[in-house]
Image (spheres, rainbow, N blue to C red):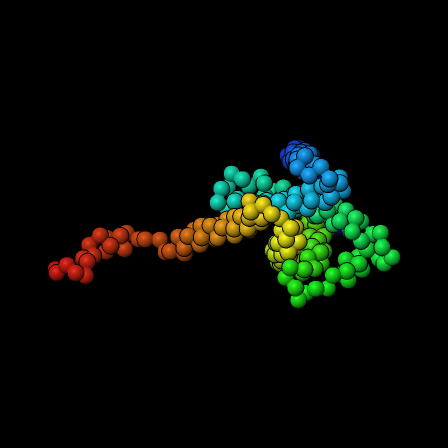
Length: 247
């Protein structure tokens, strides 16, 4: 017997979730472009979209990485975990749109292949201030593509759960690459200390949530590993004298 898979197992909850997510993304881009245009009237729409899509994808990745530990700390948030794959695919699409606009604006008008231009236009790997941050973003986008392409029960079934889980753990590698991409790219020209500190705050939040969830799981596992106390052990504990008390 063959197993049939559907591209998306739509139900009412997922439709509501995706509708809210689409409205939030559209609202974020609208607010970002409007405020960016007001703050910098000389900025083009393409530039504002590049920044809005990139910052939006970066923010969404923080949310994706925070859902797991938040659900362990607060089980009432489990519906967010149920639909996390949709958010992950949307994060990749936002990053893809950001990268596509950036490649078109900065690399598509030359005489060489745009992707080849991304890889060869800057090779200053020995300079921190001029480090080729675009290659870091491209590497992260490739990882997110692999994860988005395998975010389906078909791959979970055919790759096996351990392999699928190991593959999707590369999201942390993509996150590290994007932290470097933002820090060595957009933040190099950022003059606002508040905006410059946002990636650090986001990274501290993600790490803090994971540590808190790990501590909670450790406490739960420790309680489960303790043998149950019998009636005799309870009696012995009640009648045991402290070492410094003379009988």
